[in-house]
Each structure stands twice: as C-alpha cells, then as structure tokens.
Length: 260
Image 1 (cartoon, helix red, strand yellow):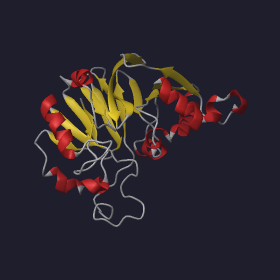
Image 2 (cartoon, one colour):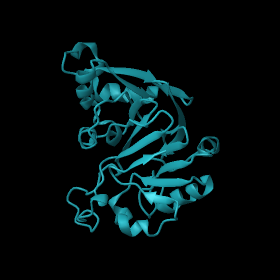
Image 3 (cartoon, one colour):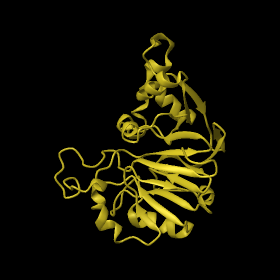
C-alpha cells in the first residue's frame, strides 16, 4: 500500500478489447516473445491514503488480481459497461469471502442498469444464494465523489456515441475508450502531472484515439509524464513504437507500477 501522501498506480492491463495476442492472429506483435507485447484488457489499480480500488474489472480481472497478489480491494470504479471493462465482476466473490463485506462499486445509473442485466443473479432477489458476489452499488454522476474518503473527479469523454467516464485522482488522470472530449471536460485534465490516455493504433478508428491524436492531447495538456494504454496489436511492437515517442511519453505495459 502506498504512503498517505502518494498514489501508487499499477497497470493491470493495457490491451484493447481482444487483448494481445489476438486469437488466431500470426502478426509479428501477436507472435512476439517480448512480455511487453502481451496485453490483458485495460484496467488500473489505485492505492492511496490506505485505500485500494480498481478502475474496471474486465474479463482478465481474476488473472490480474492473482498476478499482482492483490490481497484487499475496497472498490471498483467503472468507466462504462462494455464487456472488456465489466466481465470479471463475478470474481469479487473472493474478496467478499476474505473481508466479509460487500464490494463497493461506483458507476453511473446507465452502467448500473447494464450490470443488473449482465449479472442479473447478483441483483435480482429471486436468485440470492450464498455463492454469488456481494455488491454495494454507488450511483455517480458527472460530479466529484469519494471512494472511502479518496476524492475522484469524473471526466466525461465519448467512445463514438457512448458517454464514458475517465477519472482524475489528485494529479493523475486516467482516460480509456475515448475519441472525443468536450472543451469543458478537457479543462478538468489541465494541471495533471501524469496523464494516462488510450491510443489504439496509428490508423484512424471510429471510437478510439489514434497515436497521433493522443500525442496531440498530451502536447496540449503538458503533463510531466504521459502513458499510452488500451493498445491494439495493430499499433506495432512495444519497443519499436517507444522509439518514436517524445521524451515525456511512454507506452504502458502490463504490471508497470508508478509512484505519483
């Protein structure tokens, strides 16, 4: 756990919805023997002020918790309802069993309605039995909220036409699954010392920033350090792309830990 005045951030996953390698793909990235080219679905762990919470719980959630030896989790904060960001919610059962308390989740009403459909057996009283996850939902809007005392500021972005929340915690801003940010939301990012931003690939995409678009945003925000995440196999090999980036920009990789 990080000290009271710092934030420890762990990249649990840095890949796009298919992960890398992609099933049945034989491109040079998917066949790479460099561990930095293997990417689970995007998620981060935030540890600060004695509190630990994940942003999103995709289908690799169990694997990520085991790899990082996570012994305690206070909450999960969701960006949006797509399967690559919510599919692992059932695996909070292990934390329920160990801590004897429900898992706090923070999401919009829209996301909660989708979770209620995807995990109907968790939220429908007809299906309640001892083996299901115990969840304590907290509905958020585009206003600051607190996770066990830690203030979190939503930053609304658009994933094509779908509104998605990025989040700012102190001097770090985390944004995934975005290709458009309104001016008033963009202002929330200013002053961030660390900016984590999605950059799917080098060519245009309907719902994600390209590498060029992400670098333009980073240049405007001027963080001390920026990390790219939600990376596709079409971006290229980690080491090759890294050589093309400005000095203050790096491609994140699974398991990377930073102290802020």
